[in-house]
Length: 41
Image 1 (tube, one colour):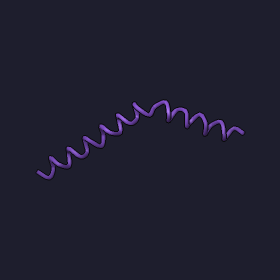
Image 2 (image 1 turned 180 degrees about the vertical axis):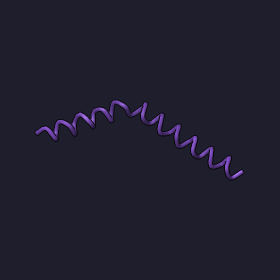
Image 3 (image 1 turned 180 degrees about the horizontal axis):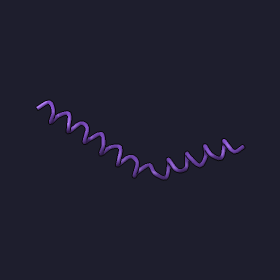
Image 4 (image 1 turned 30 degrees about the horizontal axis):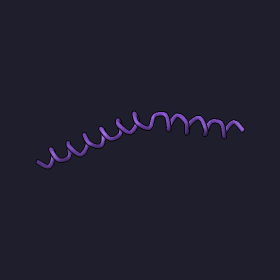
């Protein structure tokens, strides 16, 4: 039973990461571009 709960938590965590990456992709890319621009100065 505990293993099933653990598996559910892990699956929810992985799902959240995948959803977050898809949803925040353009924000992450923009942040990377800004950081690169600041390093080049």
